[in-house]
Image (cartoon, rainbow, N blue to C red; front, side, top):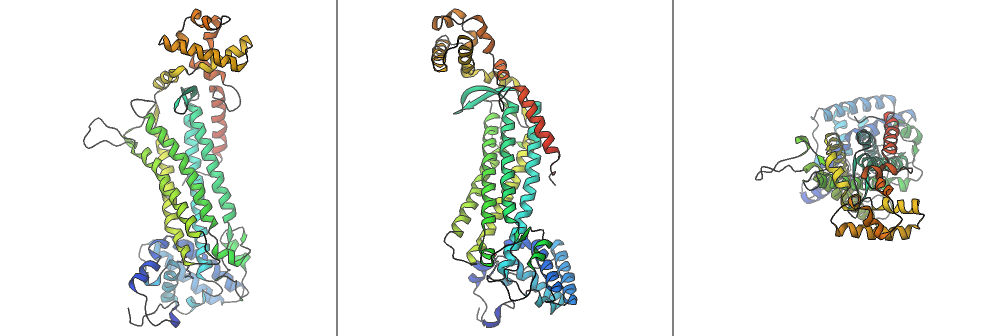
Length: 469
Ligand code: ARG
């Protein structure tokens, strides 16, 4: 600890090497090495720009380029030796470049700092993740819409308060998630739009005196433009917060659907079957088939929302510009984005795998007087009753059915007429669950015809979208 082995990258004024615990708390290489590709891409863009602006020579640029390619090759081959003493991915890459090409490596850091470098790398990384999510969510939407189309007329109970409310179709229920994942994709795209500005060239915090060309590096890295304020460039982590917020909402959607899957594969519901591919057995209870994938998808939101919370708290109250606190952005974000990726893929797998059990859904759709609203609507339509009165009359008829322990459709006509004398035989036409769903033809309603059309529209729209890689 006392020997004179100060950091070769910044140790000019240092005599001692850091204490062990300092190295442990300070080093980020164990996790930020996953941004090595982005770091090298950023360095190449920077070197090209420096050469084009006459800040370094073409020969230096060529040596740097070649060296960086070799470093990338070593990383991809798993041969790169990362060093904690070199703290982070930026200095690990640069130090290896120095070993490979000598002096020109030292010119690469002209007009930049690790502060704008890390901001650039992380933006590139998050942007790549957003692109993957977009494709993965599109493919999940496709699977859902396909299943919805096949089940446009599969009647199931619709719930409010998890109590039978009105019959709907399974296809309609699935399309509700297609909508949610569509909004999730929109949120990720919004985050991407704001994220896509290049901080490279902000240097440590104040910009640089070298005649750099920020437009050029921004374009080379696929950014729309350079960021406008150097202080903001190095201290902003909104792009991570925003992406984690989008990820959290998406995870909430996955969690809600997972919960339904967990419920629906129970013998009590029996609406769905999942195959061996997405279930596990019990080591003690031979009969068990557990929906572990759905349970884990349901749980992932915990870490993802936790990551958002964690970074909000890290960023809160940080003075401008860069503070080392911000290094704490990566582990939680990596973990959250990894978790979301697994959850989206597992959900897509389950959607493909799940088999509805239409007879159980149909049976349950009739429980709990689920067509009572249809009866009330009939009274309004046929007898011109105000809806509030019809609601009251229907309530009394339901109470009567309850007393007779029968369904609404099985109540004799004279029993209904004892509540409202003008009811006729025709009322039975609206009391079946099939007729109930078929009558819900309002835009966005559950009528099978609507559902089939909506599912078809989605499929057409999704066909022209990127496919998951
Ligand atoms: N590893 C650092 C991070 O992730 C890189 C930036 C370090 N900058 C500095 N001035 N120490 O934030």
